[in-house]
Length: 517
Ligand code: GDP
Image 1: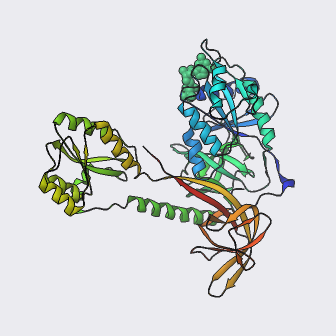
Image 2 (image 1 turned 45 degrees about the vertical axis):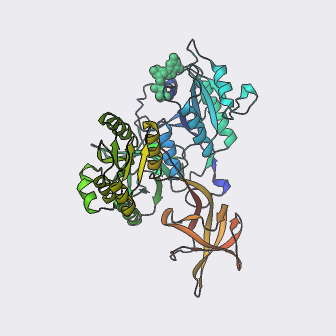
Image 3 (image 1 turned 120 degrees about the vertical axis):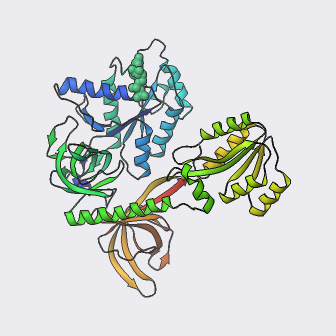
């Protein structure tokens, strides 16, 4: 469960699977999504005008429903996963039969695996004369994907998005996989879901496409997603039709938000507008504080002068570059300007031909820059100045080495990728005030496991009211490292005392993964 204890099993009913199509660029993700939608529209919903709302639902030949997230590529999938939103039940991995397994195919496999989502392999472009489906199957073995026809367990199908071949078979496999996963949700509770995409529409105001994950969303519901709130004025389905409610796994467009939330934001229904406003304002404050922290840059006198060339918010790696001839200096500057991305880049304070001089070093020191010497050395005065100011001078005679070195130095400036793994849920049963210690929450672990030191979210009536760390975890009088589902325990939180009986504690681990350019 995302927000609170799991629903008792008697109220759970089967829900359709949510599918994301992933694969290498040009292998046919968009074509396949279009073909599937078109096929089912022609068959069952003649005249139905499909409109792009970021996701759509179709009926399989076996009669079940399948929801497709219509934003192909890993970006959306990864963005949602990073924010703890589990939006996908099954990944359809598209591999073009004429091209085989490519870098983004491997990436997709890794993403699906990391999220614990099963893969169905769709070997596409089977209509092409140079299609080699056998080669695709054996290439996949290198990534530990063994398809059924090679004796493995991964479901597979040869398709052609262009000729609309075997699309029914693909839908059947998805339904089969979904049955194996036994996907269930409780439709009879306030809705929860995840924002797939959102925009500010000129005529209609903020519009958000949401995938309902539990409960049923209805017109008139008061909703919060991320730092935005509103009241559902209208719900629009993937055919552009107004509907009065949306059950689990149904994608739906919501009109009625006061501002556009962000993709990956979780949606919850709350009891009234006052509560919704309170939560949204709290999160807006949090967002502003985070943005302010990011924007704080150290500015010294000389840096201020140089800052005209600085892009706001972007981390820049300041450099002074000296080389033997103007030609090589220009080549280096050009190569370095290509290194980096939206977050980091180089800033060349000065470049030119000639040895490294004292004034080069002083300029570098004032901006905390590194001096690069290409086929040149520093003069005596310059070396003294470098020692005095603690400025680094690096020498190179191969451009490739220089660029490579700067690349890895800049990678160190990238903020690490943040990954969230759900651990478990607990419910607060009673609060105890312990002298000198403060408040202790007497809890029952209802799902998974809770661990000392892990990250926690406190959830009251479906909304997050605090995020922090689990400071102490006790079984009776003893400190313990972890407590499993079905067991009672005592908890206290870092810098937080305002918990109450009935609050739900979601426990999760955050891992930070180093990135490179
Ligand atoms: P995406 O980048 O993965 O979304 O790939 P697209 O759907 O844009 O397809 C890339 C190219 O492959 C386009 O020119 C499509 O027309 C073509 N294509 C997609 N599916 C098939 C197919 O089944 N057979 C053939 N022959 N071409 C296809």
